[in-house]
Length: 73
Picture (cartoon, helix red, strand yellow):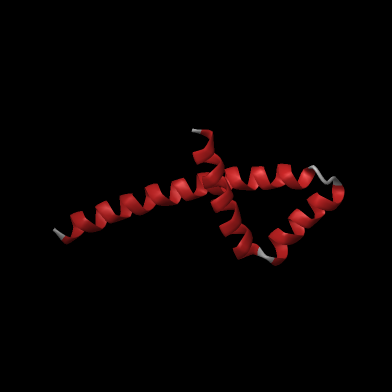
């Protein structure tokens, strides 16, 4: 019984991780497009934020990707 519960929990965690990864990539593309509108300075700031503010950029990309995906529906 415990193994079945752990397998189901693992599958649920995998599905959640895939959704978060999808939102991360969508959000990264949206934020990159927004930064690219400012030219080289925006793109340089975007990559600097990824280097210096990595955990914040992960959260920001997931949130912006989720909002963008939900707004498109």
